[in-house]
Length: 114
Image 1 (cartoon, rainbow, N blue to C red):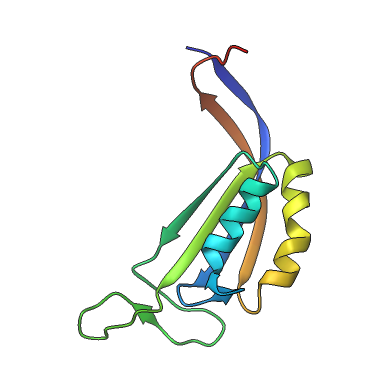
Image 2 (image 1 turned 180 degrees about the vertical axis):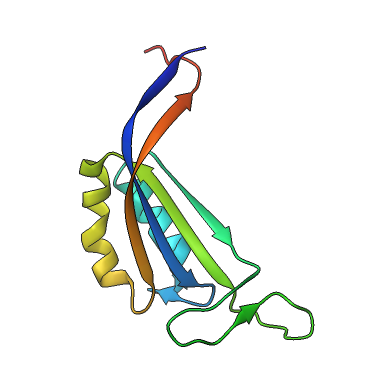
């Protein structure tokens, strides 16, 4: 099975579950924009508990019944492609945290034939 290795960028976007952009969930809008820009991949993670700049704890505890859970959108691609998405985040994000770091990738997959 073919294997691709190399250096890439990982973009992480920390937002809330209730954050919206143009009538849809912000995480959905970010993933759709990443797909439109042909980035390699994006994944959305829903957190069980967390807090951010406002210091309000968000939790999935049945006692607290918080429905605004933490969301992490993670995108991995080359620096060139990640840089295509960043200007859109400037417009989309009202509140949140973005981190960017270098990572080493090992991608396994079937060879694609044209």
